[in-house]
Image (cartoon, rainbow, N blue to C red; front, top):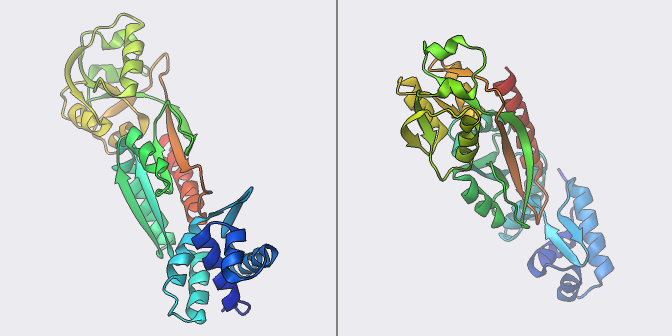
Length: 302
C-alpha cells in the first residue's frame, strides 16, 4: 500500500492534466508553479513511474498518466482506491495497448505475441487492428495508438518510424514443385512459370518486378492478390509460385503447406515499428516490443 500519497498531490496532477501547463495548474490551485512541480515530482516518486514528459513549457502526459487520470476523474473513489490504481499500473495489473498492424503480421504473428503477452500480463487489455501499412501510419498519427507495425517508405512528423526487422523476400513453391530441388532461385527460374503476383498497388510489387527483370524472366501471371497470406493459400493449393514477405512464407512452410527458397540476388524486405512522436511508449508497450523482437528471431531464424 502507498503511504505518502496526499490529496493535494492528486489535485495537482488533475489540474496539470486538465490545463496542460504547470503554471496554469498553479493558478487553478491558488499556489505557485514550483509548488505544483514539487507535488507532481513527489507523486511520481510515490507512484514509481513518470507521469509527464517535460518539453520547454509543455508537459505531455504519459500513457500511465492517462490511465491514472481516468480513475482520478471518478473521484468519489477514496484515496485508498487511487493508491490501488497506482500500484496496479506500476505492476502491470491495469492498462491497455492499442496496436495497428499490417495484415502480414496482424493475421498470425501479432496474435501469437499478444497471446504470450496476455499470459504474462493478464491485467493489460490489448486491441489489435489489421490495416494496410498506410492506414497503420494514419492510426499512429492520431496519437491514439501505442504501436504500429508496417512496411513504409514515407515518414510523418507525428510518427517515429524505425526498422524492427530487416530481412529478405522468399520464393514460395507448392510442395513437390520441381524448383524445390534448387537451393537458391534466380530470376530466370521464374520464366514462363505460373506466377501469383502482388497487387499492382502494393509497394513491394515493383521491387519483385525489378528482380524478375534482371534476367528478362517472363513469368505467366495467372492471379494477383493484395495479401501475402492469400498468395500463400493459392501456392499451397498448387495454383502457381510466387515471391512474398518472409514471415507469412515461413508460417506456411512450417505448417508443411508449401516450401520456401531464398533468392539470388536477395530482395530486401523491412518490417517497421511505428510509435507516436508526441509521447514516449508506455512501459507495457516497451515490454510488448521485446516480445515482438524475440518472436521475429524465433520465426525467421528458428
